[in-house]
Image: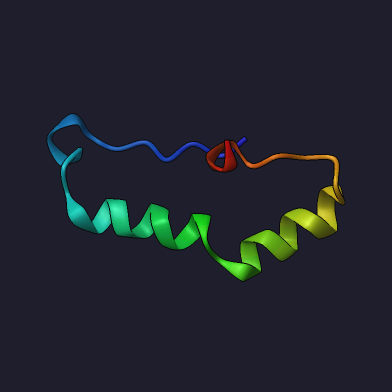
Amino acid sequence: MIQFVIRPQEKDDPRLARFVDIYQHSPAVKAALDKAHGSLYQAGWEG
């Protein structure tokens, strides 16, 4: 499990939202998850 943790005063920083969005839609991240787990996982952000 990966958790992105931030300080409360930074919760509305658009750079952090962009970082998480890039991670969630990264083909490299998906490929690494597929390689490590095959079809035996569901990313939390995919619902």
